[in-house]
Length: 511
RNA sequence: GGCCCUAUCGUCUAGUCAGGCCUAGGACACCAGGUUUUCAUCCUGGCGACGGGGGUUCAAAUCCCCCUAGGGUCACCA
Image 1 (cartoon, helix red, strand yellow):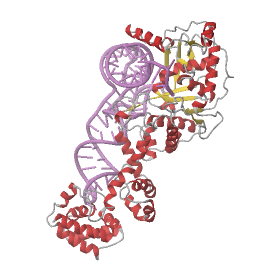
Image 2 (cartoon, chains in turn green, orange; image 1 turned 180 degrees about the vertical axis):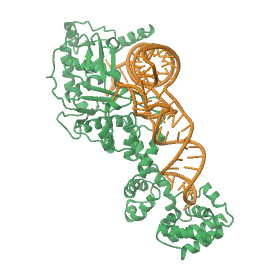
Image 3 (cartoon, chains in turn purple, blue; image 1 turned 180 degrees about the horizontal axis):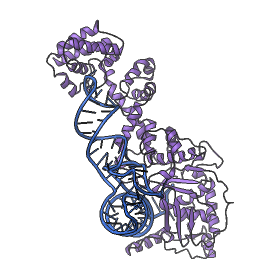
Image 4 (cartoon, protein in one colour; image 1 turned 30 degrees about the vertical axis):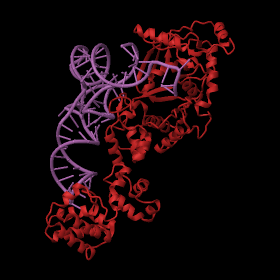
């Protein structure tokens, strides 16, 4: 039993033939206002995976009824964001489908008709109360420490009286349409929370259609979900309290409510609903910083769900294969940026070098280090540059600043303080560097990293000195950085001329 | 404040439905070692939790009740 409500006097009429759609249909219904929130991404992922994992249909419907806040750009961003995550939809504003249109603003007529039918059936009523009166009532209730609630002033109006006032004079008295909430209670089985119960006494006779004739959210969602044959509704916990209103509406419409599942909220470090207050909430922010897609998906999946409790790293296919709504956590999940970053780094470490090179190239180009043509022309060199950084970066965006030394002019290298400090630890560094340079420019040179690296070590050993005595000043001269990739690799990346020039500059600098 | 939801390491979580296999497992972070030319990676080890109180039971992280704490929601927004 999904939705039960006791004492339903007259609920037998049907506006539309009872839906016979028994197949699995889930949807995501975002409002195109602003950026693509991570919470939306996770909800989309869970809905999508649920459908994909059991041969259901996944629908994208755009809830753009708030015309003043909705924008086409935002809708576009949602499409792009979801696709970026690897989510596709079988029906939607851009791909069409049997229940077209998929943009809520284009469906208003149907909703209004449905509302009218409810009015005719006596399951809704006109309310002529002015906003001023409503405010007064609410203030009085608050003064008496009562829960603010509509006092049902217009609930008892006869149909004749209601019709008369609506029709006359001239344009008629303005009104809203309210849903008549029956006595009793609504109990339903939430797929993640179990049995949830709401007493109808707690529910207002809520507004279905505004003064201006436009239907409100709770009415529109249900109306659309009915039209589209949605069988399962998985959404954020903030919607839990809307559920009884919606179930009552399904019943008034003579429809079977879908099954509901309310996902735990994603929380910020302040333990409140994730908001810009405590960090980035927009998918775009993470994309821009270079979080790999797989890491974003993986991390989002981990917010409220676990594969087996042991495995943290898995891909989308695995998620789809194993995801079930009943396994999701009930408690809110605090967003942990550290783990997110780690996951991103781990994902990068598992990429192939060519793939990583492709992923990182736009960031390099963006920073003006190379042009797209450069990257193509020097592909082999670029991949070597990338390979050396693979285990040192966590985000694609970390790459450009780390390889900057390889793009600077030889006399314009930026020296880190710590690098210089390391370089100055040894008295005879200048002489050693000079010797090394001479050797490198002559017999020591090799185009093979392994060979060159081995030869460099041998060179040090032959002199009976410790590795750092050569390598620290050398690293400082070559890159100006205290840490970093293999030095033979650095030498090869720079080439003999540049490496030599930097070593000589380093000798002078350190003198 | 009313209503609703929730409660395992600092964080994400496994275990809870079908009580014993849990002296509670994994991951991030942190700390200590090891590998390494540096940094990073990697490896090893450590730290670290069943919110509190009552029950039920031979036995409770697991079932029940109360308390406490946190969150959500109370729009002619969605």
